[in-house]
Image (cartoon, rainbow, N blue to C red; front, side, top):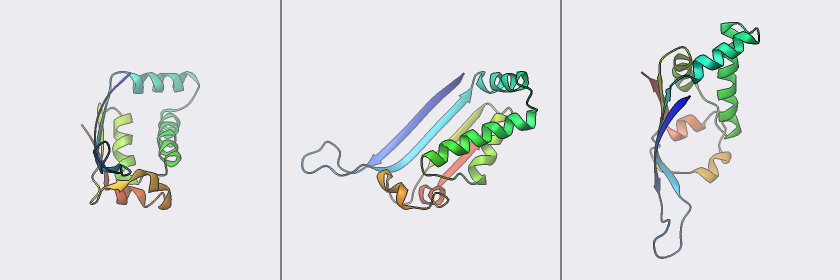
Length: 126
């Protein structure tokens, strides 16, 4: 499977005295470490008759679809490291470091292709 670690920092008044404000994303860090899932998905796709390229594209499409369902179109700065992760690098790290905290309930007000820049998204593999 995958191991998953995350750190999320929010800005705004949540449970302090006074009127609470909508929490805003100040920082996000997520690390996925593959323990067997990627290989098992590849094996399953091969059993279905998909080539390695077709299986890889299906996984990239699924990741992109997940982003789009959440109002984000991932750019190459995210997709290329994810491709490397699927290709065998064991750890994928994605982070968001917006210059100003972002109200996530308002993400839908932005074009999905602008959201990676708004959130200052980046990804790395190791």
